[in-house]
Amino acid sequence: MPPKAKFTKEQIIFAAMDVVRQNGAEALTARSLADALGSSPRPIFTVFESMEEVQSEVKTAVKKLYEGYMDKAMAGDKPFKGSGMGYICFAKNEPEFFRLLFMSKQSAELNLGNVLNGIDDYSRMILQSVQKTFGFGLETSSEIYLHLWIYTHGIASLIVTGVCNFTDEEISYMLSQVCGAIVEKFKREDRV
Image (cartoon, rainbow, N blue to C red; front, side):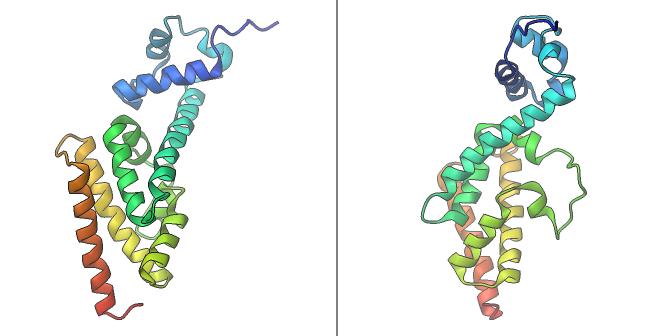
């Protein structure tokens, strides 16, 4: 008969997320997790097969948290801008989780053609919001989205790495300015 679990799966994941939130993903070890639980590592492995499984579950839980930010941000009347604001807000509020999802090596090699689909499950919805907001076709909307994602990721990275900090008002202004300039460029090229 297997030993009775001292902790639930949810309790272990919650503690593991706290380790990552405080010290980064690389700090999540059996020992650090056991310390967070006030236990030895043994009870962890009555619930999980390995630390890789714990890490995978943590990443899944962090993605769910990110989805909450994005769902809320995109629910407003400007979902495209909201998506950028939500992305940056997640970076500001949860820098270690942002690093885990968006500043670590990806399992698949990404390039300019597939980066948006590869890093974010919201890419299709965001692309549709670009098309609806500005009236451009798929190709032009994809280019606008890519340019703005690179800019948005840059702002988020500056915040997460402690290089700069911006107020929400400054972020909103910067995103509006850059988006407006890019959209105007494509309108001048008659790419509607």
